[in-house]
Image (cartoon, rainbow, N blue to C red; front, side):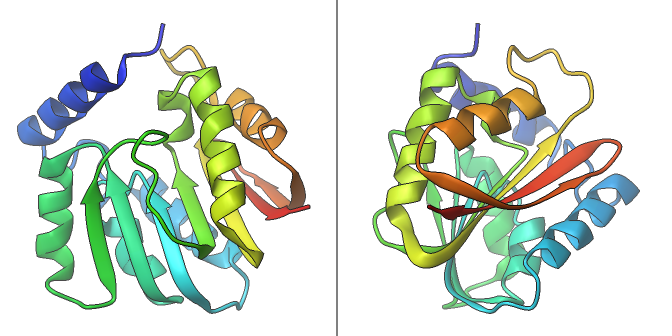
Length: 191
C-alpha cells in the first residue's frame, strides 16, 4: 500500500536529511545519461513556463532552465528544496514550492510539465488526478514529459504501470516514447 501523503513527506524529509544526494543525481552515469535523454526528448523547443513535479535537489531543474524562460519546481521535501535553492541561487527565473501533488498542485498554466521518476510514489487514484490536473494546466501547444524507471522496485506501481495510469487519466496523445534498458521517456500532448 502506498504511503499516506504525510507519511511520504516525512519519509522523503528523512531521506534527504540523512543523505543530500540519495539517488546520486550529481555523480551517477545513469542519472547524467537520463538527464541528457530527457533534454533531447524536448527536441529543439523553447518553453516560456515549465513545471517540474518532484524536483528534489534541482539537478534536472538546472538543466531544464536552459530551455525554459521560467520554472516552478515542487517537491514534498523542504530539505531537498533548500539544497535546490542553494544550487540555483536567487535566480528570478525559478521558484520552488514545498508541496505534494495532487493536493498542492500549483496554480497557473505551463507549456512544459515534467514528472521525472515521481509518479510511482503515488497511488492509482493520485496518478489519475495529477494526470487530469496536468492536462488542465498545460497550454494548448504544451508538452508533458514522463520519465520513469522500468527496473524492479519495491513499490506497488512500477514505471510502465504509472505511465499507463497517467495516460488514461486524461485526454492525452502520445507524441513519442523512448524506451531504454532501465527507463522510459514518454512525451505527451493534450488531445
